[in-house]
Amino acid sequence: MAHRWTNTLTQADVTPRAAFLNRRQVMAGLAGVGLAGMTRRASAQEALEPNTWEEITSYNNFYEFGTGKDDPAKYAGALTTEPWSIKIDGLVDNPGDYDFKAIVSEMTVEERIYRFRCVEAWSMVIPWNGFELADLLNMAGVQDGAKYVAFETAVIPDEMPGVRYPILDWPYREGLRLDEAMHPLTIMATGIYDRPIPNQNGAPLRLVVPWKYGFKSIKSIVRITLTDVEPPTSWNMSNPREYGFYSNVNPNVDHPRWSQASERQIGGGLFAKRIPTLMYNGYENEVAGLYEGMDLSEYY
Image 1 (cartoon, helix red, strand yellow):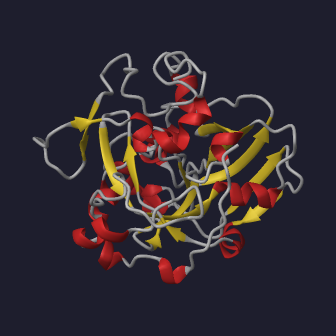
Image 2 (cartoon, one colour):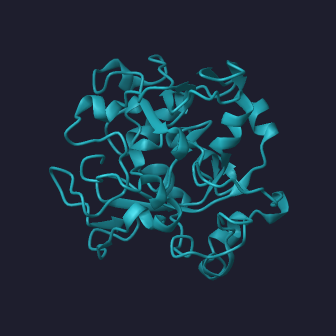
């Protein structure tokens, strides 16, 4: 399990949205995630200029609202996100339905910025607001026998037109190994650019695992289950040959239908130069130890 650090930041440390939009300030001083004492740093990932609000909120995968990249922005406004609760069950000491607002009031919200890659070989740089998933799991009380964390997205046919079609086996499911879930880089995102997270981006809270491909970051979560067996995940259920349980960013393991060795950032235009994809999305120093000794071509 990853070493846990003690948070020392307050809301006063949050970088205002105007500062995010200023490239010089982005380059000079975003609050980074340090694994030893939460030291401030500007890593190669954090130094990248974030995408605009319009880009982040208009180009999305959220199949519950349709398969087009612009479908979520068109239709997700119908989703009712208040009130919202998350059922936490399985191998926990304190199972039950947790009110979203009550959860957030217990957490210290910090500013994070992650390079967010997806399997289509495109990427975004998104300044997430959120809290560590580990803090929520600790609130629920993880029992000794737990080895995995399973997640489910809401299924509301009257508000989510995509779930009326068998695109996937609804509800959307995802899962992490417990040590991945407890890692300090794994967050529950509640906002973007210090605004509440929009519906099309996974309101009111979604998972963000920055060293994995985007589809691992499940949206609009309604259930979290601690279990001792590897949980089923939607894309692995749909096509296990193409989508493994781990789904770590690995430029050395190609998707069966395309190379994952390079990417193009959204916002750079059709002729934007492709750049090399970094192992574990640039967080190799922080997370490679989680997979020591594993055959990454088998456990992809």
